[in-house]
Length: 149
Image 1 (cartoon, rainbow, N blue to C red):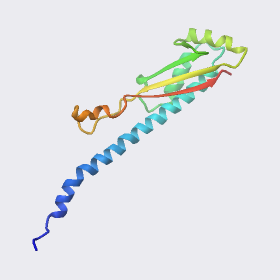
Image 2 (image 1 turned 180 degrees about the vertical axis):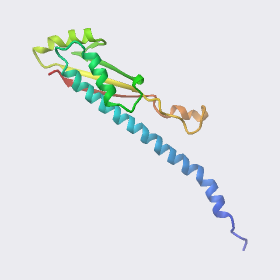
Image 3 (image 1 turned 90 degrees about the vertical axis):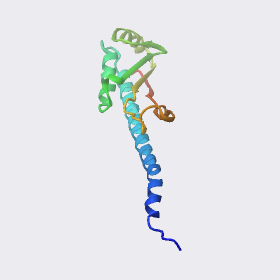
Image 4 (image 1 turned 45 degrees about the vertical axis):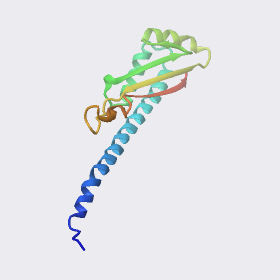
């Protein structure tokens, strides 16, 4: 019978890269989940804020500030929002204030979409080896609909 010395080291050398790849994948998807939860929370907070902005002069700016504050650990320059009132998009304070004003007579659905660019992904293998850099999304988005108050 031949000596079995060193077989455990060879088994470890074969399995270690696979185990490390699995662990790094778990960590990467965990980080993606944390970012998605932060974006969902920011969208919810921004929708509540936007729905309560009828009669104010800066509804869009206030909503954007609330989204950034709710996702405080994410890069603020990567946070963009899009808001609509009754299906009409508004992209600035004047437009949103005008669109929210007629909503005083009845309840109106106010969808608020908060999009965050996910820039924290670094592939396990640098470069474009097997398209590993395209496995994770570059954009994490959430949409919440609220009713004007």
